[in-house]
Length: 364
Ligand code: NAD
Image (cartoon, rainbow, N blue to C red):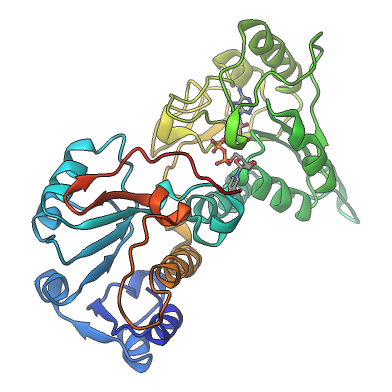
């Protein structure tokens, strides 16, 4: 909750409560909440006992699940596939649980799509992080003190994070290249001022698309063609940002040790797939390392947290939109309409039942 979203929530008929200091690290002081009509309470006991609807970022702890009851609704990231036990416990308590990571990726739900909001921030921040670890300008310059070549940036994976990274890198003046297994993104990549990397591959570069805009696993031949292209590009690239993911799998290994070895001293790799094992084999999750040949590899998994003010604002807006859909009468009462595709898709526990996985949405 931000002070701004609290004002909107009150227009839906709700009273808002927040724990002391909850917004401080994101730049929102208790006083700002109070000014927006929010009751600031001391500690989790006071908060959980008063609130009918609890919105948070991370999945609940065991202790928090213990605080749930049949009259409470929890809204948070949940990752149900990885937290099945927790989900069952929440269902046993009779609480309704909305997993923000399960909001279906249909047009109508975009305003609540927190995965996209956070991926957008991660993509932006990846470029900023790369710049911070790179000793030169992004843009080429001719100055009295000499000529500076532009940086060359390769973005692997042009989903939400990749496109944000492309936009940021091109706006800073880098020569930007991007690759994705889904050929339909080539046009988007090019419209943002980057060059799409095509493979020398006999079949059309249509290998990697599957349903819902996500990628599927590449064939061995396609993968070889992709790696051969990356080997060719590695010595030229100053910055490589990898974002390639396949739903419910470990990240594909795309940037191999020999590619790292072929890169110039001072080059930077930002591996946004580090959470899922990394696209680069040498990535160390949550750490920054420098290889013997002077390549910095960043495996941080908390890029949105490194921009807490922005992340909180966007996430609070996603939550507020979810609350708007849950409160059609604007009467401060949740109407948990399981006929609504978005609410149904995101609900993983309801009325003592586990309601995950959901049926596919009926609308686009
Ligand atoms: P993601 O995080 O699952 O994957 C990131 C990217 O990696 C994807 O573009 C994928 O194609 C790519 N990738 C996978 N394997 C690769 C490989 N071997 N080499 C190179 N790239 C590889 O994806 P995402 O960013 O969450 O979203 C993917 C797509 O989902 C979007 O581009 C969009 O079409 C769709 N989407 C739709 C909505 C909506 O309609 N509400 C919202 C968000 C995303």
